[in-house]
Length: 116
Image (cartoon, rainbow, N blue to C red):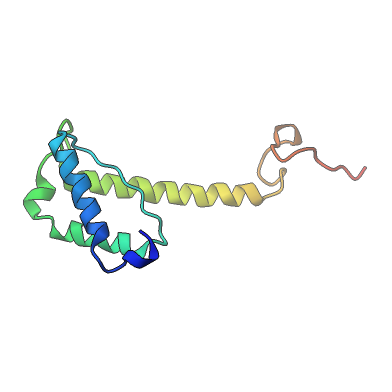
């Protein structure tokens, strides 16, 4: 949303339109990406999740064996695992080639500099 649209419930209206359109098209899974900086969108998603009844969360998702609560749990678990793995990948990327367990021939950082 642009700067001048805050506080007008435009995000809620757009999300409601997306969900109702998906329902009309008989789509059962909607995937969204919310950037961590977008606090308004995160708050909106949290408020909508808070409005879901226990029956909504226990209803089985179409075509799966999981109910919505289990699906949300697995999505969160996957996110947390990926976030941890990305941290490890970034850490290993900063290590020297020898410390990371690789050989200079396997390095993707370009030619190694030898002092001999």
